Image 1 (cartoon, rainbow, N blue to C red):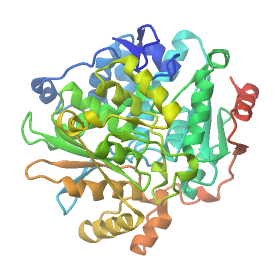
Image 2: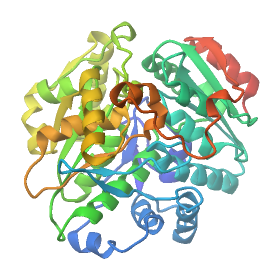
Image 3: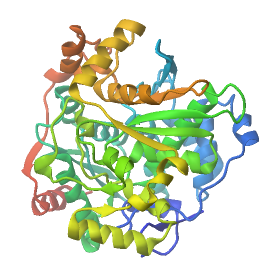
Image 4: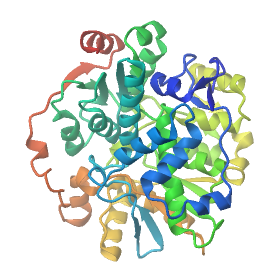
Length: 466
């Protein structure tokens, strides 16, 4: 299987090439020339597979330049019991919703589900090629720690993770900044997440700098992240569909559009997904698009700091892949729209708006701080289950789209302890801290605070690249 760019300026390339490159050379995002298709019989034949083996089957549809036995060894290492004590358990709630538990990994957030595989496949491919790689990423909260825990100590890899200074929870900061591994570099930039992502895209778009310092990506701009996330949509479907072919809906808290894009990919592959329910917080750029067809990212000055901070994003860097599908996989049209975005700060696809739900199953809604507190409190009182603020956003919006006889799986985002202050505000109770992490926020932290400036970040990479 070969991969192309959403903007058409890249020759077809195999998986392992685009794995190490991240952003396409023309500034677009990579994706398969054609998505693999799954029929009901194939899906049903996978029902009894353990998660690691299912992951190898699904990822094998996207990866044909790694031997199947090696791929299975990687997924079994990534999803071993020592890494994930539980793998994507289903948690029924009293109100008819179901949680798909994705936060059982080492950093207590759903990003571990894909990132642990990335850690395995990066090290494998770099060893096979005898190369090194400098990972440059941006995080609004959970991507950073998941990437760093997956890549810490990996041979031939350095990680440079940009985060918005002071805009993550204390627990999230401690998870990242307390790591003392020599190959992990935390750079806190004075700005918001979107500005951190702009720095990443600027350096990834500087082809000379990218090639000289062997830059790669772990953000969801890397297709390998999306492919690994497709697995848990198929896993969730197989757990709750009563009969082969029965429809299932998914609700996804979304800021950067990577997690829900994986659901879109699964649906396009033939998984019987009825609806994809997108939930945003007060930074509702994506909700506005699905409601109106107008994509209107906001500047940093208008990006609100909320109690679901990992979704405090006003420019969804993964959205371009969905736009590519919306406009009939026409790279020239995508380039035109991205040009309009740069010139006018928006583009209008309202003419296509009826197809957002009709053809692609997308609906959307917004959740506020008050909604978050109410949902956390009500869920705990009714079901005895504590949820984090982002998952609460998903539950709130999902409840608006419940339908008889169609299960609604809400993708869990993180464990509540990562956002303890909001949990206390909602319930009056402090969430349980997992064993071994009781002193996390008291551990020494190592972080470099910089201005949100491409030059300063580039200079730091020059001095610390492997």
